[in-house]
Length: 446
Picture 1 (spheres, rainbow, N blue to C red):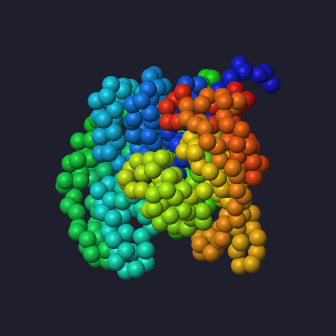
Picture 2 (picture 1 turned 90 degrees about the vertical axis):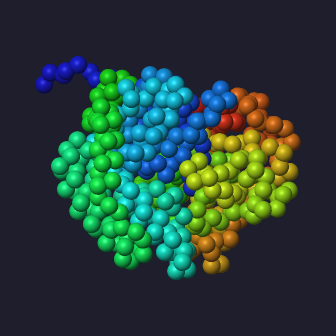
Picture 3 (picture 1 turned 135 degrees about the vertical axis):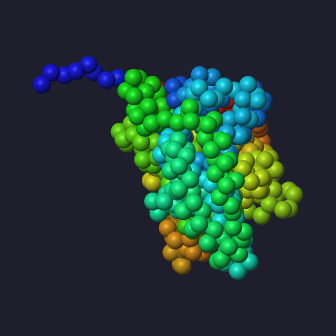
């Protein structure tokens, strides 16, 4: 059989968080986009928040891929993402207001489920009910993400493609609104919503979004076939994954690297390198177990230092992030689930000036020693962390751009961390700006 022309595929990198989110993925994606010709979001919604600092200017993104800040780079929102069309248009307009061109290079999958106003109301009413009943809040962002994913799995979701067909959209909206109003006005003790305002708003936004709708999976397949390097950008973190995280204190989607294929419409053979992002310590927003958590209220304590020096507040919610030591046993779970090729350690500079630094290497649980994060959230609550202690460094690492410039104790700390978690450290972020980066092994050049 005669062979056709040889196809030249690009090299593709998946960026995932390996903790409870907020690891600094946005900065890393922006930095890597200098070597990519396309950036793909494959899960989550506008509950994700990525902060980029470019030449001292801070920009917060929630739904649009971080690659949008690189001029001329196509950005894709894959089918695994749930889209609030009103928020998406607002985010586009915010970027345009600061001079970023968006509409000609943003492509939204027609298969994305839509987040509608009743999803938001249901999300917030559920959290309020859990709190009032004493069950304890999950800690959602109240953006309607979970209820929208529920409709997707129940095969009743409104999808982006429905925006192109007003009559079909109206019929599906009436049916869906009736269902959610029944729950809102009854069990959740909330307020039922009216059809017409929701429909009118959706149709208005639809006209602006239609030019950006696309067959995203086919587009990125063709781009890769033609030699483009692609970057798949995950949201949240592995320990918030709906299947593999600290359930039920998790998000509503699969945050792991394997979902980059299903959530964007390409095969797993196009995922060539998995870059795991982790802070040099650990943070968590919302409820749920956190074995290495430190108290943050008292000035002069380590927890207070991590919180204030690290400026640990959620991009989307503004909530203070809970802070604690790096948990290598939890990281080990993330490395296995994602098949991590290499790690990027972020916010190393936040540990500067601490007299000593601790890393959790395992736990005591029911009289047993274990070296990996348990699967059951109740077991995690019962875990007593076991720490290794390292001497700190009294020098600054902020803005350092080479391994040799790092303090000796900082290098020893990082070398021990990669041994404990079983994955190489390929990059180190020493500050929020693009230039504050040490590269030991380049994901696009290995």
